[in-house]
Amino acid sequence: MHDAVWLNARIATLAGATFRDGALAVAGGRISWVGERCDWKESARTEHDARGAWILPAFVDCHTHLVYAGNRAHEFELRLKGASYEDIARAGGGILSTVRATREASEDALAAAAQRRLQRWIAEGATVVEVKSGYGLDRDTELKMLRAARRLTGVTVKTTFLGAHTLPEEYKGRADAYIDFVCDEVLPAAADEKLVDAVDVFCERIAFSRAQTARVFDCAQRLGLPVKLHADQLSDLGGAALAARHHALSADHLEYSSEQGVEALARSGSAAVLLPGAFYFLRETRLPPIAALRRNHVPMALATDHNPGSSPLSSPLLAMNMACTLFHLTPEEALAGFTVNAARALGMQATHGTLEVGKAADFALWEIDSPAELAYAIGAAPCVRRERAT
Ligand code: NIG
Ligand code: FE
Image (tube, rainbow, N blue to C red; front, side, top):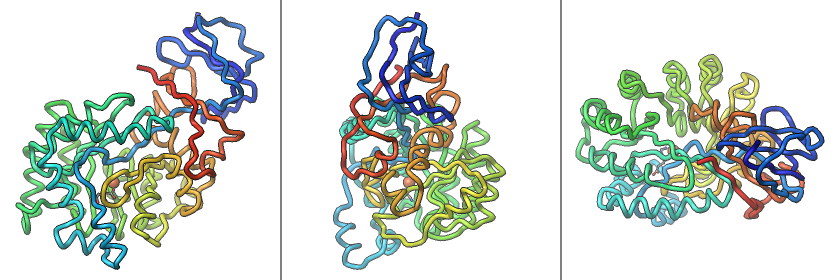
């Protein structure tokens, strides 16, 4: 006996099957049956009529900076007058201005603000959201951010430690000493409190070098934690290849990645996470190497990269539209980017991202005629229901 069955649904499993008149059953928080309705001969305690809606795997947003205080509308104004993101960062603004606000905020205030933002993801059918630290850059604030992230409700939260996001003012000119501090004190303390699912670094001219990134990764690996990387966003520092060498779950951004970087990702099995929100908001022009990613069969995930500086974007659906219009993804690739490939970018492919028997009963019902509509519409609200295994 199944707990519930959804009938009169169109279903795309994202694992290769589409059912035009489908049925999907759940039991004990997992998918227990999926197929054509005419083959459904079992019974369930509750029967739901999907009224012809499409049932798709729930969205997974695999890259966000959802926990922070304040906003950077003023920097947006400066950029509209001609300042660049890098100019603002070098002048002590950028990430550091959010660090100042976040250090001052209480854990309660951070959690409440993030919970409010999260309603948009829930309304768009997301059940898993990754949240990074990285606006503390000191021990207490990094831990405070991760604790705030772990308090969020309504979605499954995956926390990523991003202590090496940028150099804090108190370590100016002493980047290696800051990396020592991250590796010796902050990351071990966060891991000790079981606040870390993965470790990320911003490898960039305005952040950390390849050698510094590798030191953080070695430390993560000693603690048994998987790694991810903000790689090649503003320049080609060989970030993709570095991520691949450390068997990263994902390498993210990748606008400046080379063909060799992409080939390395293919060999390591890392996912590529594309972030069109930051590309759009910073008015970047250099496109990520989509053709090479396709040619090398690197799984392409998509994410909002929600953050106050480079991507104040709170809509997975809009990120899908941007990925198609700006990066030339197909609507089908965009959907895979927020489901099956996003789960992979978080190491959750065994439980999330597709509608297969045994996986979590996380799915959304959409009032649309075809899945391509999700990436096509701008500002629509087609999600009529979201189910999440708890
Ligand atoms: O993913 N690239 C580094 N981190 C963020 C930006 C953070 C910020 O500007 O506050 C990003 O784009
Ligand atoms: Fe980011």
